[in-house]
Length: 287
Ligand SMILES: [Zn+2]
Image (tube, rainbow, N blue to C red; front, side):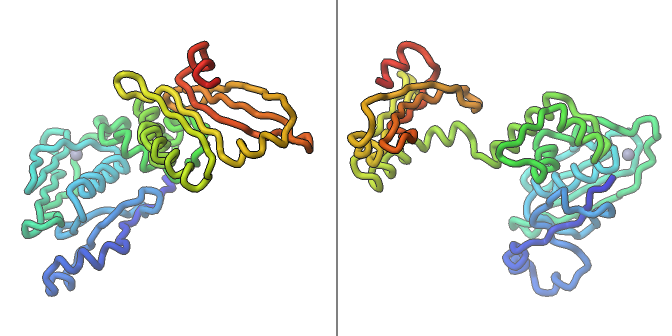
């Protein structure tokens, strides 16, 4: 296993420290404000009194520990004030109890028994703590916006790096989460189109845009011709080429384009449209 594990106490620490009584700062504990799996050392563990910026971060920290050590735990109690975990194997002493610190935002690890007496036979290679969200945290640094990794590649990566088996569905879902975090949610991007068009017309006088939704308000078509392209058309040859290509997005729309040739024999774009699919109705709308 070559992942490095270490707690990350980032720039949020100053703010968090200000929430603590000054005498507490001298105690032997760490304050975790974030965790990055790719920068955690192999000896990473937690200890009683450690503080966490949120309950989610606390849970995530133990998910990492569980995956790293191939065991599963279950949540025996979780509410707005406290949380308890125990090893999923009966009679194993591994146990965690944490609670909100002085009613504020921080959480403190109150009790932590880190030893197991689980039989080797029940060590998990498919721990349920290996959620899609956690897998996405593990792989995000290896991804770019144009990554072509498949869920199978992610399954192999998780097995090689962390020794855990994850299902195809979890790997697929993890990739969705990573791509969304890198590129933004496709749904949110489509919702930004009307604002984008407004700005486009503001800074490109003479531009023409159109946006159409179906009766339920779902995206159907959009069209844009930038002012400079409209202005340039009069200097181009009187031919227009149109073409369509499918987009590799979640919703699989089609990009329609119209272009011409300028006096310098170069392709000169005139207009773009995104439509739900390439069919007679969408082409008619484009024209
Ligand atoms: Zn155990």
